[in-house]
Length: 201
Image (cartoon, rainbow, N blue to C red; front, side):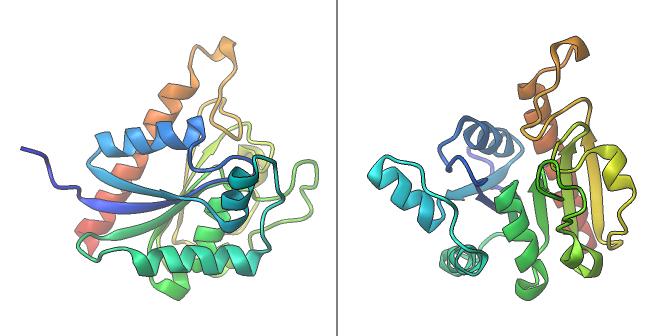
């Protein structure tokens, strides 16, 4: 008998690779192993890029926000829903949490562009009311552990760090860890976060 999932996670991809990327597929598989139903989709620009078989720049933010909102509206309401995403997809998800009154998870949040730590993308995270888990590699070039420690984020934001991980959770060989272990850890952290939210409702 198949176990009924405890929750559904709408999972948005990052800027450079779509829902079929190795990272997204591996994460979806690990979430499933935790009895969480992942729903993956592609933003409009990625749908076009795949159809034309050539890279396209991401859509503007309003288009991304609208596309994710439409995905939410198309989903059944039989399970608790969490908005989630990798990098850019995580940023889009976090910007919708308060509007849609949903909790969220961001995997590798892009706190700032690479090499531009002064251009922060945290304004909405300082006022956030909905619960958010950010799973971040300690060495993430979009916001590492030392940098993020200096940000003032809302109390509803919970941070979890993956040892020696980069933006895609890859640790260096010398760490004795590997990316797959970190993706599995990210799914375990997600499941724990979801369980906590379900218990507090």
